[in-house]
Length: 117
Length: 109
Image 1 (tube, each protein chain N blue to C red):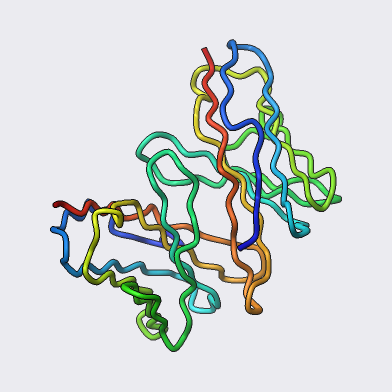
Image 2: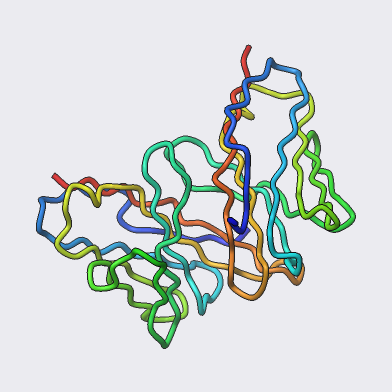
């Protein structure tokens, strides 16, 4: 299957700092990527859709000024958590769709575990 | 109404048992359906796509019922390693993907 990478896999930061997470599609191009957040024992929650060449689309309740998304190229999207607070501690996962058997299939990155102290 | 609904479980079954999960979806025009498996503290991984005619991969069988708008996943001869959360995903159109909340399965020795 297609490969999506994320970096870093784990980050611990102080409250008030900003953290950038990268999501890369390694063997395919992705005009669209998705960013999710998952709190312990809860389901994935879609935060935003990252669009190459245009603004990201944010889900209701997600602050666009706090979670900055930049889809810099067809293989890279970044999520920056600005002025992080302890409540932002979570597992952040990106995904990208790629066509398989004439159907778009989602492939997920390995996730980034963010801990804000 | 949610786009995709799943019974969160948990399902606790003995080794060797057969277990089935259902997932209902609200958009009747949805075209693509998937089952993903997520292990604790890991990302979801594609288990199988769900085709209109149904499909089987070893001990796993996925089926689609368009009339009743649900997809199912059947696991036969459960193994301890099948313990995970199973997510159904519906792709109504284009790049929209909707996830169920996941069904937790624990296979007990």
